[in-house]
Image (cartoon, rainbow, N blue to C red; front, side, top):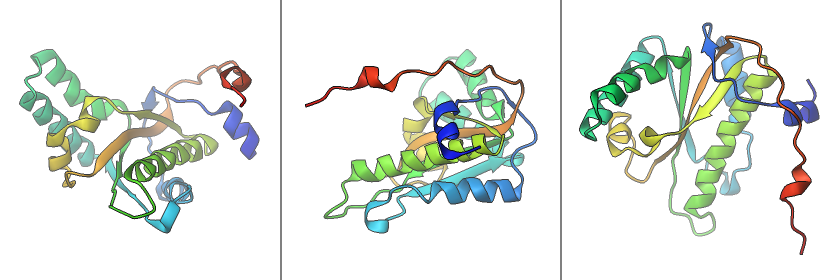
Length: 182
């Protein structure tokens, strides 16, 4: 797959099954992440990978956070199953710092770009991935359970695995309809 084909055909794959990427595939995915624009070479990201027992740990974190927020039993049960939607979940965290030339927002965007690069690399390898956020990305209890600092921001949970079904290719959109010239 060439780069233009990747950019024009990439899509999310929400239905994922085992296996997760193997070690060599995961290395490619992670190496793609750290090639994104990074003003000041700050590397403002951390990737927390959950597989196997780690998925159960992440589920427990979600359940405790849901309970702490006063969620009803249905949502607590849903939270327990969220990490089980894929054989691997990569929590992408913007690890920002104060910098005279690189605003926090730019560092968070860089972490978001890393997430997108990982999803694109997975797609190029024939691996499925979907980027999810939701309330747990902004939950102080989840941050604490993952050992994050108060200024760290989860930018997403990248669910990765083997596509459960061959998804039909989405129709091509016309990017020029979102343009305004000055």
